[in-house]
Length: 333
Ligand code: SAM
Image (cartoon, rainbow, N blue to C red; front, side, top):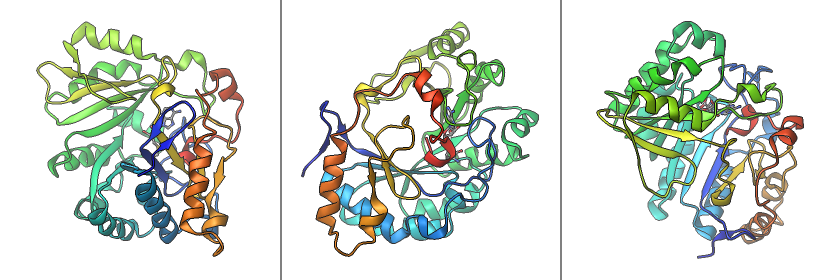
């Protein structure tokens, strides 16, 4: 089988699919413009047939091992269980790991069926352990539901449930140690993510709480031990005496571009080679998927060529801050 290797020798085995560009939360740093309705017309969004056709090409031709669905909020896409049912059939002929990143609000409703239909991994986002602050950050009063979703996912056997926490100075940096405590009796992995600049989020250097600073503070109270493994994004630590673990994602202070193995497809079928570009797609799948003149082999060849254009590393923070067409709610992280 071929591999998706770029000109710097990086092999791509991880595909992230945005299922919808709208969300049922309005986190001020991610969805400040209130993408509660999709900015796309229905016919601009890839259908399940199109998504599945693409996934089959990526997996069969290039050995993609893991697919993560994100958004917007993936659980607001209609009939998501149908998508998983169909992918679960495909998984029987070609093993591939299916993962989901969600804000947790509708998770308890969908998780049993998702799990029955092949969902392997779940990440749930939670930036605060304070109910009032949750409302300030997200615009909604769903704190209790998200906590219940985390516990429900752990009780359903997802181990670990990954909890994505974006750390921002002056917003939730005072809760760093509370989050480590939150992992004491739970099979969860708290992932402290450095705050990143995106279109519209008015990122400022002073808002950045760097991985090194976070780690120093965690170490001042807890005995943490580095966990050696192949993860090329997160720096993972055991917390002695805790069931849960803690990780740091240093996208800004110590980027990990040299080991990047990710590709992204947006809701409207544009492939992005890097999270931080100014909206210019390297490849638009929609036209070729909808043109009977394009075979699977044609599309597969286009993917292989496109990956060769991936840059060695992401642009500087100063450049990223000037980009207008790079909104997280449309990309899915
Ligand atoms: N709605 C889903 C959720 O809430 O997890 C999936 C989409 S959301 C865009 C994916 C992840 O990106 C969330 O964990 C969110 O906190 C994170 N994120 C959004 N904007 C970010 C930023 N500026 N810096 C770092 N992470 C960010």
